[in-house]
Length: 303
Image 1 (cartoon, rainbow, N blue to C red):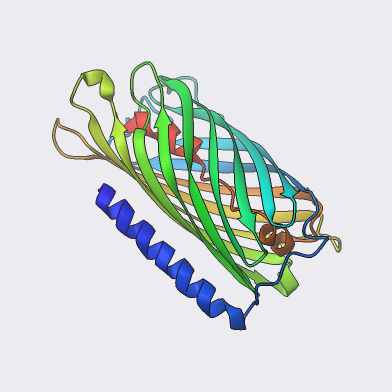
Image 2 (cartoon, one colour; image 1 turned 45 degrees about the vertical axis):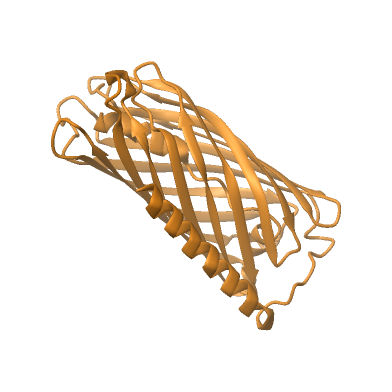
């Protein structure tokens, strides 16, 4: 499976290289303008719903229908002519039936940062972060780190992130010793005021090390789509809707693989300063980190 991650990463990297070489006719290596080199801040509030199904979900003990509420924030600081220092933080909580308390997701907190070089056309950098996740039966710190690349076009962007995910939990039910790769694409409309984003990620690691040497291999597939539109003339306020899917496959020594699928729907508001809309914001910043709290919050259910 880790060979698969390497091949996916190599393919996406090659796509970035081809795209960047062919993008000169679409968008020359134009430097960021003075306005785009300004400090950019963004705050996000949203509500949503998570639906869960799978052969390992215990219907009378685990809540599989969870209303969600979340908050987030980002600040991007230009460093000199081509440097970028970006921080982000996110938190979400789930409202569940107290009587259904077996491996039910309760929420997570994550924070992280990016250090990157960018000229407005391309971005290369490194990222790292961590946080904590809670379920009714398990909780613990989580962390990730890796590298990223991005190419901006006149009406879109294409990028890749890849790295390592780890965790520490009392019963060993969280996802750890994992490597992941994630591809992200964006298309802009209405002069950059409307954005359509899609992403897909794959990760492979282990879980359930409390059973001694018999660690279970776990595959994680995550995908999503988001539509955002600047609701004000200044672009300071955006409305958005998003769908996020998650599929886990645990290869247990005990028999057939355990599987779980989450479908999450979200809608919210973004308030930003220093950028006039989604395209100007994303042209000057790195892609947001993957929501590993949601990934980790699902893994105890396939234990």
